[in-house]
Amino acid sequence: MKVLYIVPQGPPGTASMIFAHSEIDRIAASGVTTEVLSFRSSMRPDVLYNQIKSIRSRIRQFRPDIVHAHFGTITAFATVIAAEVPVIITFRESDLNHSPTDGWMSPLRHEHELERRAFHIQHPIRRV
Image 1: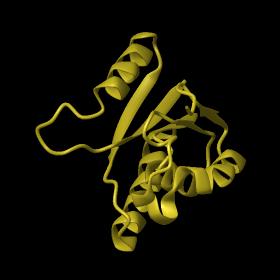
Image 2: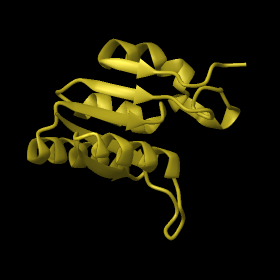
Image 3: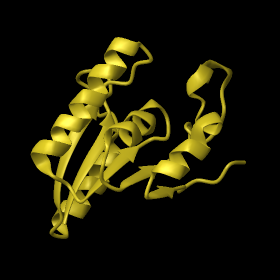
Image 4: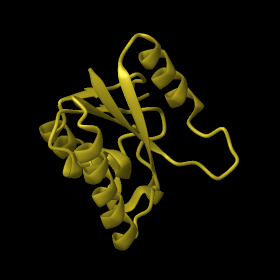
């Protein structure tokens, strides 16, 4: 089995998304072939377009069985648009709770579209 992970890119020099990378390491240790694509989260149309192209290109090169997007925000949105293979989305804490700064990409506003297009959506934390 091959899994392509789409993980938001943190600021340079930080240990950003350590929990996602730890999960990926554990999955790889079990014998699954993994690859990680760092996703530059941006609402700018030109950046988003290039990120979608990058995901498609990596899928063509790596040929995964599944694509796993971390966070149900712009990362998941771009992944389900780009992927022609099953997609798993892991929602974490901040992407489950609506914030006024979310704008048009509120995960709650687009969750039905993600659920329609994604293979499986994983909700490890419940809304409070």
